[in-house]
Image (cartoon, rainbow, N blue to C red; front, side, top):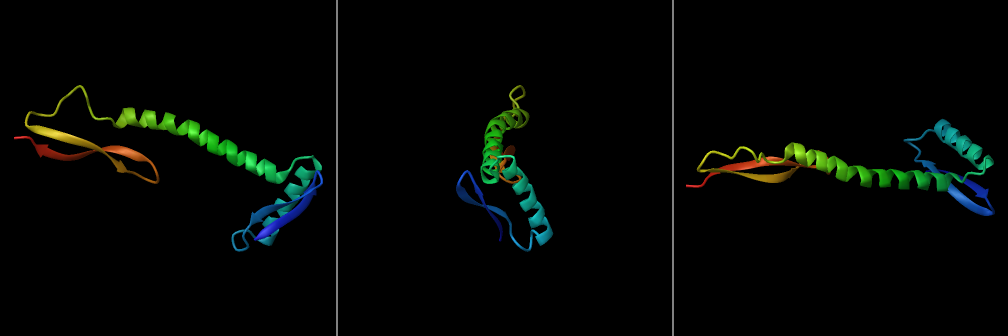
Amino acid sequence: MWRFRYKIFGTERKLSLGSFPEVSLRDARKKRDLARAEIIDGIDPVEEKRQRRIEAELAAKIAAPMCWSSRSRATSPPTSSSPPTGVSIIWRCRAGRGRRWRASPGPIRRTR
């Protein structure tokens, strides 16, 4: 694990730069140099990284319901046309890719 120790505002902090096989020494040094530049500008890199993560999580929380509502309108069962008499279509949610859920027609059953 590559780490960069620094002191800002009288507090010693550690910034994780990544693991060895995934992040080469050259890349770790580049990340360290960028962090040093932020420190010179008076920005705490750890706090900046935390703020970016929080903003991304907030954006995902805001976007998810909007995405779901547009998906549910597109995949909701048809309401204007009913199935033929004697047949009922069961709608259910089925796992799609990742954590998304999508509506899909279930089995078609005869009601007679």
